Image (cartoon, rainbow over all chains, first blue to last red; front, side, top):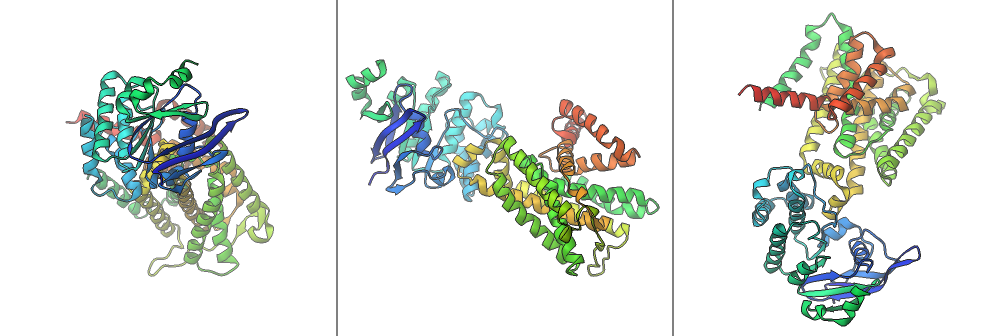
Length: 235
Length: 315
């Protein structure tokens, strides 16, 4: 039984197949980098898994449990947490309240406060704890969004281009934070990313998508020298 | 602490008005009307101000509460208090049911659907002669019967009732806004997709606040017809639904005191200036334009800014 599996996913938009029989099984925890050229179907796969889009065919399972088309809020409760490509935080809430939101929704806010402050300190945002999230820079908001995901204590994390628009200095903080959280509680990270340098240094395994399917998977080193991957990227 | 003292003082002052201005029934009449507008406005503030749901049919739900109570009191001989409870429940149930339909739509589509339901409810009130007595209105609604040692027959006594009901509505609003439920509502206004990704069943919470807002509208509606002693469809028309949106926005959407300030400005000010109905909408239109331009957070925002400036000036 796989921790996470998609089987035969198909999604068509008009005459275009965004996903054409995409299958991927992940059995062990790890940081999995999901890469591929533009139009490979990464975002569609993400949307289908996170319950935003209904697939035309195929299934998604978490720990053997079928979750195809399950609503996002129920997925969150099943332990699947996500960030958004466009970066979403609650702008009017303070940074602390942003982090306390998920525990409050789940009804276990007690004790979550300590964890929230610890996470803020890990990424040097503790001094903004009582400031509205709208006052943060874009990169800081990305970090805050990522912290919020860990407050859900997820088993599967889906990060949608976490490095996009983040300056190099914050990128290091971001990368170190993800690695630290992974060491603390190894679970399954699935990271869609265009920043090759970032994902190669972060991931334990790379999954390459091409034309709506998984083309190859393997260690970052193996993928970098794989001729099929080179061909897919260079056309 | 200072805020608590100010609110307590204001409440006591409002309760003391009849004994201080016993020879001014008109003033008390206007204050009752302020309360009667503030109560549904609190309900709409929870929906519009805190959750971001702009309903254009809000007074239709006040009408459901009012006509339910009217039929029960006049045709079934039920006492006022039982009828009030039934009116509230009817408005809440209708709010949940109709809300569940409207909330399938978003932003301006949601507004249009609520507008359509508001018009439908009005059409029913206006035309279902057998039950609602139609356009002529539903006469003979009794004033509330005595509750223990308290009676509500006279204008003064009704003022105490309306004021207590308004305070109750504001208390509910305050409790909701401070609760986790309120926090989730505010989160839904800021970013619904993010809230869902963090485990919020958006549909459930939005339907919940629609039901709560409608129940408060129902409370206002029942008291309104008990005060006028007649239920008329015009009290719950489309124009009134728009007016209550204006009350909330002018008062300050998403501010605790917003509905009170809006009701005072909308009802109290024009009445007091004796230009009443002919000029009210003109005055209000100009005020709305000025507010949107210079104070988008409404009267409550203006007051809050003024208060901050005052605090900074006196160290």
